[in-house]
Image (cartoon, rainbow, N blue to C red; front, side):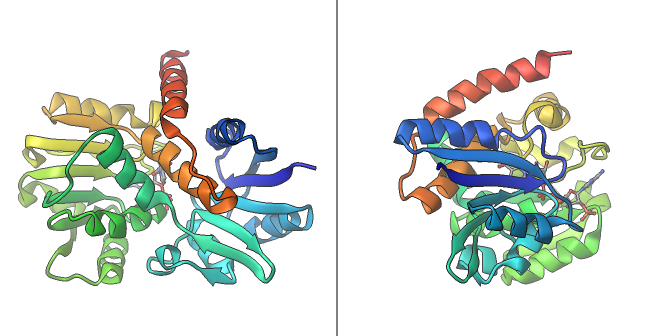
Length: 280
Ligand code: NDP
């Protein structure tokens, strides 16, 4: 029987993870079955247990379950432990082992695929949820300069800044006061605002000559922020598709011990994403 894997979250029907892992498995000649399973905070523990009972050996976890995944795990890698959020679960004898590949996924996409030098970049992180928590430590490790965090609920930005524990380098500020913060060389939208809501318009004053705008979302959800980035003259506008493929490759490596070639999968999905965006 093929090995059982799944991605859990809600909403999950749009997830490209089953397609990505099927492509990686094809490359590696591994027989696996990877499905998307709808689960919210109330039923995640039971759904994950049922998956394990049915032979599930590995899982990805997406919004809004990343914190819960870390809490349910019986052991955690440092990458999941430091921020209390996990996107990857590996079945071990004693239960689930939690890890987080979001940070390395984003940094690989920005530095390897887009050839960005992150060092010293004054960075604005908009959002303080599971995705933001996953990427912030990796960005700091990659050498960005000062990191300013703004969020709709200011307390969540404060908590993230406190968790990062670098008061001279990491600052939380009110989203409403963002105009006073000056220019940024890296501007990251890590909100889920375009899933049913909208992100309030951001001021042009954030953008300078070298600014790169990154949205963790991709496809339709990324359109407004990518449009803002182009309209305000950002040097580059990068959506979250590359990060999605890279974080998946890191999860795949944790489960199977081999890191797949991501470029072919990214290229195929880029065409797919463009088709989705232009579809009625
Ligand atoms: P969470 O639910 O954990 O956090 C959502 C964040 O968005 C919070 O900071 C929340 O603020 C903020 N938010 C929600 N609605 C609004 C709004 N209308 N205006 C302003 N802020 C808002 O989600 P995740 O962090 O897990 O995911 C965030 C996004 O990043 C999603 O689109 C997700 O798909 C994407 N992502 C992509 C990845 C990839 O591989 N490409 C990996 C991880 C995430 P508040 O604290 O006030 O609730």
